[in-house]
Image 1: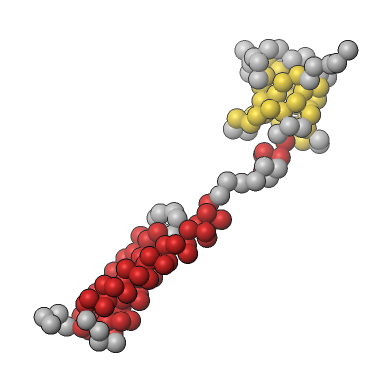
Image 2: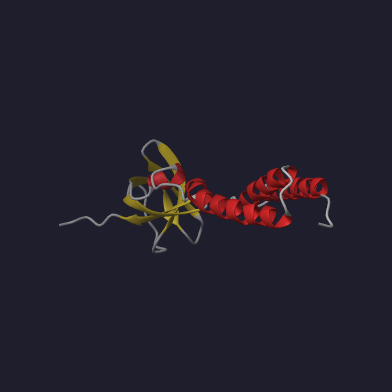
Length: 151
């Protein structure tokens, strides 16, 4: 063989480090999985096995690491559950404290014990003391719709 096995082993280690550092700037653990494969290939290289074995170990270990890391990546990057953060007010009733007028950009509602800026979902003026339902969130503003009174 023309390549020095020790040189190849250090090459695999450097390649693994580059992949791990690059993973910091990405999401999904894809590069980290290949970094694990490169580390395994480095171990095989330090043991003195040929390049073919190193590549085979790299491909197999990287493939297994990609498959196993998918579940972890999905758990970490999945959307926040409804009822957490600002989404916790969706579907709740509120009382208008300051008339909601989209033209003049006014409107404050109280949900539970919190006050929020609000705008009308239908772009209609909603007077003070009207009971409304929170139907959406846009930035830090709640989108509300008056509750229709049943006769």
